[in-house]
Length: 173
Image 1 (cartoon, rainbow, N blue to C red):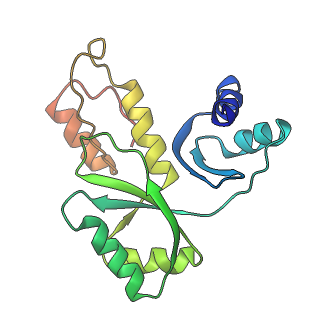
Image 2 (tube, rainbow, N blue to C red; image 1 turned 90 degrees about the vertical axis):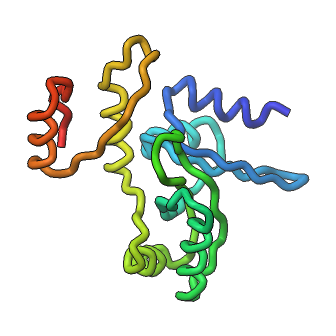
């Protein structure tokens, strides 16, 4: 008891922000998989605290939030012979029309190519950071007003928004 608390205390004390977490255990040890905002800082802190750790490439996949959405992704991977070592859910806020999953596969690039060819979108670190930054900057009336976050990825789209409302807060593109 307390092993998870000890590890998360180390991360919290060093202001490491976790984005996703998965825990698996056996009788003798546990495996914690985390996605963090600052990878270098997290690995340094964990090493200094005596935790064994390793870095692993994974895929972040945007799953359509409809019945069969996950099955579509799994079917694509199966059809290309990609074996899934493990997977777990990632951030979601109930506002988007997508779920998010992390996949560990041996052939990350092959899996990514197969999914993109079939119209499945990958989650990129830059996308996550932009969304979180916009969410932190947007005023919400002391957090009592609902938010709708729009992702605009062209200057033209941003300019259209600016012409529609004065409440654009000079959001970055």
